[in-house]
Length: 397
Image (cartoon, rainbow, N blue to C red; front, side, top):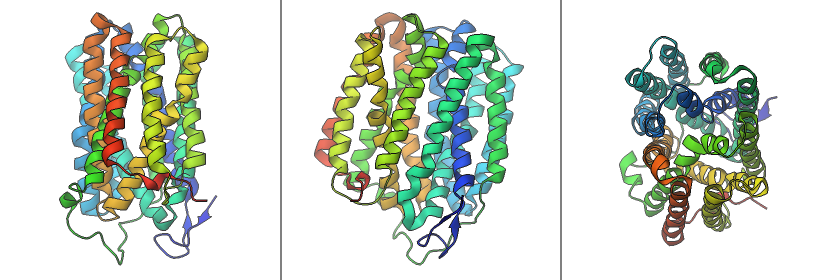
């Protein structure tokens, strides 16, 4: 499938839809094989809850540094696809150490190296995709939704496998998907950075002084802090209440299906006036989601509702990030802009959320941990109410 993009980087050049979508599919399939189940693997290796939180925090901590460094290299050299391919290959090599090195310190070192390169490829590829789309950025949702489909495939496939083969096969399965991602990066369309007539004016740093950018950075930080316990302990929490690996996989999948629906319906990144209201509602619904997971996990009906709210807690904020980055940073600073949001939100927020949940989980329990997530969602709502206007997520009518 090749879509015409009359407003694209080169007038009339067709968009390599499937080659762009393929990378998202495989990347998130690999993520789906890892994120829900790696804490279970660590638990099977007799790591404590605090150690699991610390090890998972490493994955987020590298997002503080890695996307900025690699984003700068991609913008500086102008060859983003080359950076993506190198990062994908080094990710495979870094993770392979898990088969030979054992113990807490070795595991920490492996995850540090692996995630340093793993966290480099997606922000660069997001910028690469937006560069291809140019004025047709409303098509971003149609490409990005294949990442959600890939995540579903990874979660369900690995959940089914672990139910039958045991959690010890997880490292081999994940390594295979990482290798497939590297092969997929070789198929991704290559283009050196485009020269555009209207460059982003000024340097990168003054852009950060804009009130909407600063305020949304804080909102996104709070949102990802709130997600920390979900990514680290949701599957563990489910198993403690009698759900199996396959059931947990279906519940993870439900959340991503809701995300896909959001990308299809609200995936346009054009202008409009309803986005601010949508963001505010998503933050309130996020607080409701964490409270359900905290106190009503035994109710399957309410748990299904909570997972459907993933469209609000993740999807809306992600579309807002893409809109902010596209409008404020432009092509010249797109890699650095994507890296900034990844670093502050998924990096710093994810790291602190993982560490905090790991420290509190054994002593305070799920109620306190997910209750704190609800409070963070409400804090983000207050910041957004006062300073963030996000018109770019609304659907054009």
